[in-house]
Length: 164
Image (cartoon, rainbow, N blue to C red; front, side, top):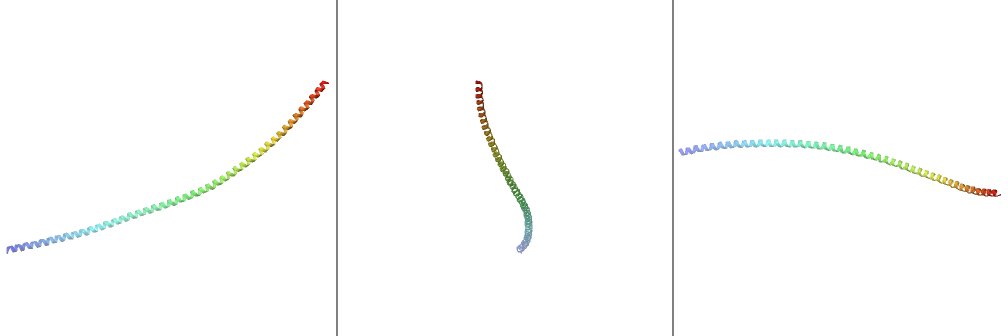
């Protein structure tokens, strides 16, 4: 009986120990599940925070990109406006240059025409003076010739007069 009761007691203790171990195991399982659930909640919260942070960063980057895009568009419009103003100014300057060149060409042609006219007038005066000179020279030569003839005649008369 004693062996049987020892075995019975031993068995009872083993059953209680198994139950106690099963209870501890259940407590550990429950803690593990609770910890697992808590970890999942923390991971989900961290994931949500990360997504929100990434979304905030994305929004900031998008805003920054849009501002940069708007600034570039404004700069482009301003540059295009400045370019258009420069083109208009160049066009005005070209028109002014063409007008000035035309005016200078006209004045130069007028001066050339005037110079040609003056040259023609001087050439005409020169020919007139040359003709007058030639006429006067011819008259001088004729008068000189006539004077020589007269002198010769006078000499002849004087000789005749002296010889008589």
